[in-house]
Amino acid sequence: MSTFAGLQVAASGLAAARAGMTVTGQNIANETTTGYTRQRLEQTSVAPAGTVAAWGSGLNVGGGVAVTGVARLGDEVLDARVRDALSASGFWSTRAAAASAAEAVLAEPTKDGLAANLNRFWAGWADLANTPEPAAAQVVLTNASVLAAQIASGYDSVVGQWSDLRAQVDRQIADVNVTAAQVATLNGQIRTALQSGRSANELIDQRNVLAQQLSTVVGATGRLEDDGTMTLRLDGNALVAGDSSRALAVAGPREMTDPARLSISWTDRPDVPVAVTGGSVGGALSVLAPASEGGTLAAVADAYNAVATSLATAVNGIHRSGQTATGAAGGDFFSVDATGPAARGLRVVPTGLDQLALAAPGAGARDTSIADRLSVLGTSPTGPSATWSSFVTGYGVAVGGDVQRADTADRSAIAAISGQQSQASVDGDEETINLLKYQTAYQAAARVLTAVDEALDLLINRVGLVGR
Image (cartoon, rainbow, N blue to C red):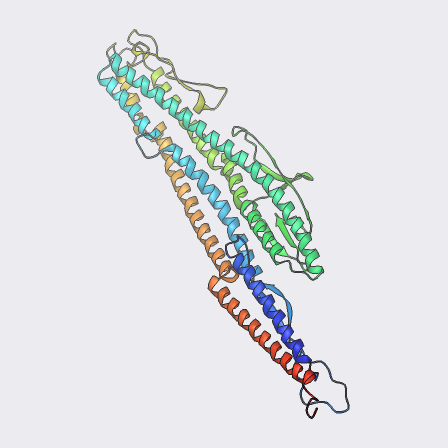
């Protein structure tokens, strides 16, 4: 064994300890970096050099330590679980947020809700039947105008929410296209780095963050390939494969009144729809769907149209059967614009007591039986109040279900992220201990180097001086 072998062993120890301090410093520096996965130095002992001689030596010590790489302490299974959980969370969170916003517009059950205004409208007819005077008639007409305005306002709020969510889908798909291109670029860089023997840990971290974003928005699923690239799929087709990506486009109506369904397709094949059933875009598409397909906002809009139509039909049917104080036949109390949504086109026709048909034909000018009949419409099992109440009850149950599923999905996502972070996140205390360990190892290797140097100095400079 060479006398100088100790120098090589000590030098390898110095190099390994220095590399360990560098990796530990990288971990500490990125403790708060989003998506960073802690790293660990991998090293192995060096086997002793072979000795070719007629008589081998009994002393055969190893050649020190070699750094074999820097391991990224992530787990692909945990990463995939996080992406799946984020996909479900994005879907249900979007549905729950949209449903809750629409529910807030309903304001039920409060004094500002449509049900309360309907009750005030029916109560006004009862008061008018008891005291058929101009003041009571004005209360009825005012309540009717407020009712029509509230129905139109509620419908317009839902339409505005639909338009905002539609525009949000456009923006999200544009972001998806940009993010997919970035993942493809990182795939190329990672593949090149791995093939050349360089570390790609930080690039992989960046790619994982972007992949999680795509899962949250469109529910993309990922798979690691043998060359280190990640393939992201959407509806079974590759959104990102290797260093190339495909772009998505949104097609469909711009107005809620259009009965067509919103769809996503590939820009290079617009005739091939992409079923986006996860992520926030998937949730938005389910909310923006027509009412016949379970669209949340369209269902609310249809309910406003239904109550407007029911209100006009029920009130007009009774009002037409009566006559005014002058004996004129009763006409329509409400008019509905036939060219647009009923909720927007509801108007009050009479302007005063003289145009209200309160009396039944032949019952006399002071008869108010028609007003009595109108006042009890609020208790009719098929009347406008019942129509609205039935919708509000069913919608409240549906919103509660969406909110509950969103809470469950959020908890699942938090649990998945916590599991991932327990494996991948940086622990400051642990890294401090590692830093002290490598620092001590460096000092010890330096001391070995000094000891070998002193021995060599003695051998080279002092041996052979005796007797001179």
